View 1 (tube, one colour):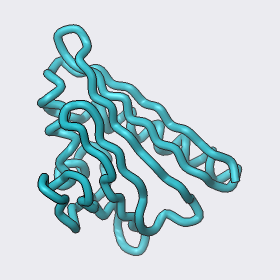
View 2 (tube, helix red, strand yellow):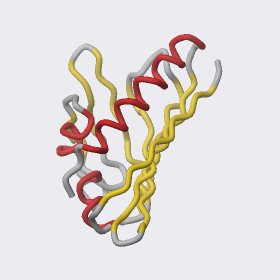
View 3 (cartoon, one colour):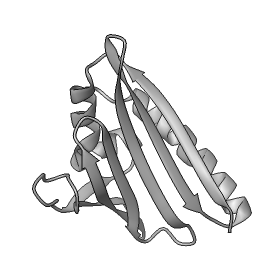
View 4 (cartoon, helix red, strand yellow):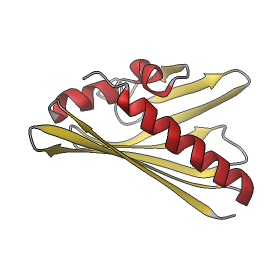
Length: 138
């Protein structure tokens, strides 16, 4: 199966810390993505940190994502840990950085999928993230 990559960037007129807080909270992420998102497992140490799990979507089409790495105000890495077939090896990363008087977020996703489905999912994710990041209110 081919590997697909999504890379979406957004500038904010807010400090990195505020943008990080807005995107790190699983229970607020639904407003950004436009689908239901709920934290179902608390992280080790930080509630939305490493080991935390969020469920996304509506039954019967849900996936669970597990946070695998967090560097506060720098990066959040996650992977799909349940559901998502026929996609596989789905990994995502949010990178936060200062940009002028504000900040910048790069959201990157990689996954394996059958050719036609992969191209469609890549387009849907790209458009969804572009629109969703514009809705973030840090």
